[in-house]
Image: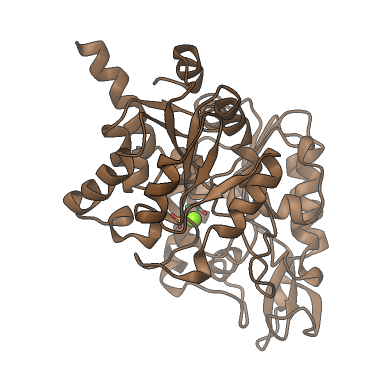
Length: 406
Ligand code: 3PG
Ligand code: MG
């Protein structure tokens, strides 16, 4: 795999460099255009700064949210261009389309050291199409803008999308520093994690985490399960879970996993149960054997935090993915905060696996530097740990293999 260092070594001054970034940042639901966590934009800065300072003409492209292949103002990257400019300390030009007249004119107008952000890739059906020809045609248009391609969108490397998979087949391609760092960390926790190895999983659905649970169970000393997904496990153990999130069709799978894991799989012993999914809902901490029929669990309780913290305390390696509760609502944030704080205290290496858990670390005001690594990829890091091939990584690798063969 060729890297950004190789590219900088070749020299980039005056060259047009197309950078795939993952600028899929969360926005405030009540304030349009207000970014609640710019972690993903900050994570790609070193790569962008290096290219800009070396005199490249930098064309950045990203997706935002899941628009349906056509322009949708709700998902415009315009506010992200502004934020990126603030972070870079130099203005970022914004193209109001991805491969249309605005983008074409903006690319043509680039000077050495300029940075341009194209509008949301997913405003174009070709980006996510399952049809190779449709994806390829869109990739052709993107590739035509540049001399070389850099992938620094770790959060999207698990997507077989035009900008991730097909563009690198059309241009000399290099892995950016964020992608390289993420892969190095994931290799470390999956190939030879220092023991004891504790994995903490949360989030809403068991079905999303099933493959990673199956892949990790043989490797871990403890697997701690919180978040909405714990209720399907609790149900499988015979507890009533009231109106809590439940995946009926996963109950028997959870029962098998519990049997296979024995005491390595640890579930909450108490939860915060509320009358409704709302910050002002009436709520109480209850034992898991006493979840009222008309309430739903929205966080793990203090006894569970203590139990999880004890398991985490002795770990040499911790991988954490998924919040323990609805941390966005203050009354249900204590579980996630407590577990996160326990992770910061270990005498070992901790990895926060992307998405919501990374956002939780920052929105709860925790010290980011107290973690070994905070990934920018939720789905991507899970798929890596599942042992799946990541299309974006395969695409970056392909070049070097071909070169070696010739
Ligand atoms: C993410 O937020 O997980 C990445 O940006 C990928 O987005 P996606 O899940 O919509 O493909
Ligand atoms: Mg995702």
